[in-house]
Every structure is written in C-alpha cells, then in structure tokens.
Length: 316
Image (cartoon, rainbow, N blue to C red; front, top):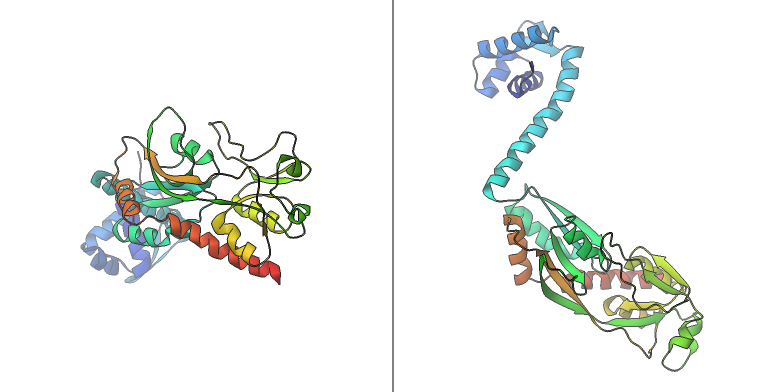
C-alpha cells in the first residue's frame, strides 16, 4: 500500500517553507492538530523522522530533505497533470506541434505565438522545420499537427486539408568568383554539368524524397537546410536556385550574381495544412488566426533581413 500522498507531501513542503506547524496550518487553512497528526502518521508509516523539533520551530532531517527534494517533482507533475486534464476537458490540446519548410523562419510567428499564449498558456507549442516532402511526411506521420508553409502540393491519398498561403519565386545565383558568373548568356545544362550544385536534402522519412533541379551525373553537395545552402553559395562552393527574398539582398550587395538559365525554376506555392477531422481548440485558434493574418510574408521577410545581414558581414 502506498504510504505517501500528495496531500502529505504538500504539508511537508509547506512546513519546510514556513518553519513551523502553526505557519503551515495558517497557509493551508488547517488546524495545527491536523498538520501534526499528518506528519506523525507519515513518519510512523515510513519509519523515519522527517523533522527535528525545537519548540514551535522545526527543521527537516536529512531524510526529510531527501523526501522533499523528490516530493517537489511529484507535486509539480501532479499540478501539471491537473492543468492538462482540465485543458483536455475544455477542448484545448496539451501540445500543438507546428511544422514549416526550412525556407521559412519560425521567428515570423512571434506575434501569433504571443497572442496564442494570452488565451492558451497551458497548451505547449513545438515548432518543427522540415525540408521539401518532409513537411507533408511529418503531418501524415503525426509528428506535427499543423503545417504553416509546406512547399508544393501534398501527396495523393488525402487525409488532410490544405489551403495556399503564399508563393515564392526563385533566383539562380552564384558567387562573383564562380566560373559561371563570367558566362554572358543564359546558362544551359551543358554549362552546369561541370560544376557542383548545392542542394537541400529532403527530410521525408516515409514519403518518397523530392529531388529539385539536379542533372544526372552532376556533382552535388547535399546540405540539411536552406540556410546552409545560401551560406555555401555565398562563399562560391556551388550554385543553385535560392528564394527571391533570400537572394535579392545579396545580389544587390554584389555578393551574389543572378544568372539567367534556359530552364528556370517555377514559383513554389506554400500551404497551410492539417489532418482532416481534427478539431481541437488550439488548432482552431491557429487556423482562424492564420486565415485572418497570414504569416507567410513575415516568415519569408524575416529571412530577407537575416540574409541581408549575412551579406553585409560577408562583404567586410
């Protein structure tokens, strides 16, 4: 039979803070005899002394300190569980995971996150960045609950609802020192084949990974995200397409050269998406918020500022 109770732990914790049974009784709105009885019974059940008594004052024994050290974790966990159960009963999820493509900046969601916490501070938020098909993969594999900026159309087979929230054009760019920068005409496949492309690796685990803009037999440097790709192209390690908002500041600063190509990359549409049939209060809040105040420009524009700063640093 369990000899500890959350009520007894709370009493021990309060006595330790107040330094006396009377102080704990006052804070807990109990009579001192109840406090004394609870402690005495707990000491008898455990077979240890929890407090040394010095008249009206008390102090924890080593055994009492150890009990309280671990007991505080239990009290916090119990309080957290109570809050989460109440939230579930009220329709609010205990956690909401938001995924996005690595082209977009989570910091663009700052005003939305702040507004969310004003109404739902007990729902934990988790932000996840994926690449290409990895966003859709994460949604269907239940690793995220909501996509705010998934690149390209989702896979066939359904199971989700999607709405377009924005689009991005792309710039083919190389560093001024790159050999392709000196070619004064639109670049074709033959021009590109002898040089290294920098490509972002698809993060999909279940869905088939996408390969974008690569030629058969071409040397390729695979990187984990768009920030790394941008950085490597800025340093002349390879070539490739970059989002317009990322590339334009560096082009204007002379740190990248925009090149025309025979086969340009079409604009990419980004989607807001969630699994069909899920109607939690937190998900509903985010859908309403994002439809009223689309964060796409903020998420992409923030990267524009970051790219500009990186370009300026690279020039010095």
